[in-house]
Image (cartoon, rainbow, N blue to C red):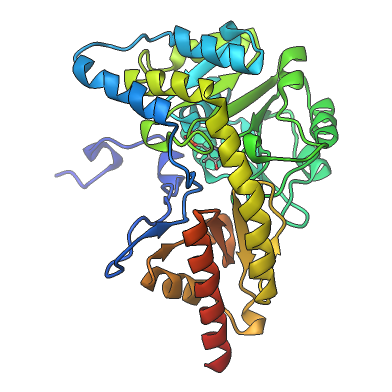
Length: 373
Ligand SMILES: *Cc1c(COP(=O)(O)O)cnc(C)c1O
């Protein structure tokens, strides 16, 4: 007679079941005639027409393996950003690279640091590698360098910082990033996640290229999912010291970037005008949304990215849950961020002019109803 034991079926490593699966933004609104998806920070302008054309050339070559070294894409990135292509590694989305960094450098007993409202993938990456996540408190929904440094122990192996951060939209100046780096031991990797870097228009901001170029322990990750409009293809890249590129190249999937992503990515990088158009659009509508939503009496966290974080203060009779449901009924999909420890907030992506106007109208009607009710 045997009683059920741990050996009756395969059991994952201890940390695996401690992971809360990543919950993506909603994409549907049953009953609504038209959907405005403002929940995943996708660009309202779509992909570059040149990228779409490059993508379509792959249709007749689906049986062929892609170039596992993604040589032409790394060359295109190197040219556009002035970087050595040998120090670029591409991934199946930047999520892929964020995971691989923990997998290569963080093991059981090791710690990885991120901030209170940091991007959720960091915690998942650290846990899946077997490491222990450590959360550094923020100040005013913004990363706090002293708090991060105070979390460092001899077990710390990696620090993930999204700058600007998702879902808060806040950033820290490059001087602060440098101060963070200067305070870290040389064996700790500082990952600067620049998913929204292209959107930032601040003189005191930098993506961190200079830090990567001059140190052995700084990595910058970037994505094609946001301003480049290729989220569906899954493509990201990192610029890193040679030794880190070498480690990641050993453990990544040999064909982790598919051929369609490779071709579309090259075309997207080369279409500078399309990216500038997206920046212009954001420059116009980010301040507009901030002003209009604030005028409704809702607090908007100042954002430098392509989304805003809106506070639905329960004390003033409004609720993020109710507003979410109200907007969804009109086909406007926004992002609940309870999983980020922000149950009273909604994250809203800058959309097309039509979507932005409908969003503000929807929020205005919601606030009026909440105050009547
Ligand atoms: C959207 C986002 C990414 C990009 O993820 P991909 O896997 O490249 O689509 C990375 N970091 C942050 C903070 C993001 O918001």
